[in-house]
Image 1: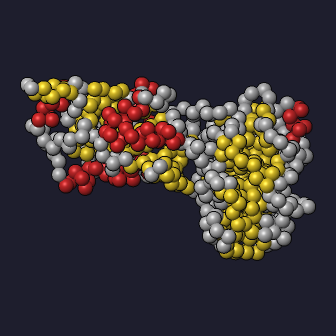
Image 2 (image 1 turned 90 degrees about the vertical axis):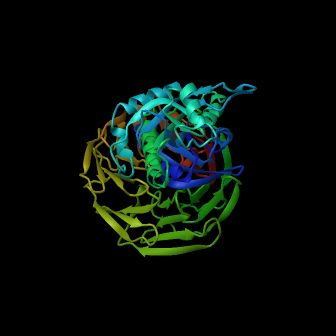
Image 3 (image 1 turned 120 degrees about the vertical axis):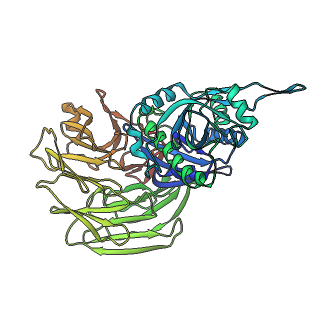
Length: 557
């Protein structure tokens, strides 16, 4: 089952585009019985969220039906309906309204003496209303607005809305009079919020909120509103929604540990020497590279093996292959050349580009949208297409470990007792590392999260995880003497840090999760592993064993 922690629905294309501007790729399309969701990621203060978006079209019925479709397909923790509304009172163009509750003003009984309203109401989730009030008290949310407001600075109200199928075009219309009489505290009117909240209400554990930007007033409708204020109001509503989402706490994992096993695969031929490397390609493809440079690929949804590439020339020592998460491309670092293999999608056709290296170089862990290699002198960030050097970063004396974010914007270099973090266009940050055996090299392991939000460093004495934005310590975990000894001289050590600051570690062929608990918890497995990788979406984990076993689990970061 695909997973998304958050689903955002919109009625109009202009609203969908405003939401999408806050998400990072790689984007995926997911077809849920004809409903085409687009899935990306959003990084908040304490969590990285996988967000699915859908344009529902207008009306409460469509919103309710597609809300239920999203719940069935993704099992989200939070859902938002984001878009525009018409102001009734107490609001200006561009203001944002987070709905405390939504009225269905069309519900009632048609009698001989006339229509008698029986207004139905559904509440937004209490916790999200509380969070909306907290965000509304400040001004930080305005920084997320992607274009300057047409005029003035927008405000936020946490007030009721009214929803129905009619477009209310004048303040003296029959519907406007009905709204004033029976929904007197509603500050705006729209067409989808009640159906959306009604569908959310019947799904236990789901928290939902409607957020609207004011694009017109009942006495002020026209082409100018559609052309200027609809996009602006959509951007304001989206900015407020994602500021609210950024402040929500990290979600609890759906399952403890690895969770459900998805599939077991086999490499077949294994070379006599070298370590295998694994990674996720675009969508649900997994790629393994053996020590002789042979590329093996699978489509996880079907379990089918995809055409790969033969080996024959040994790679350098250690993990010398990098799999791109956004393109069907693999980089192989050999003793004197960098080979880039670009596959034509899931077909067997591929183009190879070889770049000479000046001497022995090593692949930097992480990366994928750019390739990074290093010798003892410098780290070279290289273009994925042709391997050309885009930027060089000098290596410190006694380099022990290195890591890079997927796009190359954050590069971390470690010696036995310090970590240097390079952010493009910013001063270098330096962190101290405590180590029991500082005379040994390498004496530490390093990982940069995919988006560069966190850096993790493990020495023989402790594990340290820092948030890059403010240099704050997220986790400091001292190791016992036995744990230090367990890491000494271990083959295939591999550290992985997620954008939520979670750390997985491959030690002596065993995969484990390191937390602030007294013990390091080893995850259930069979045999020994050479390498492991997490899917960019945070929902899958894969490992490749020393006997050619590739195992994939459902996982929640």
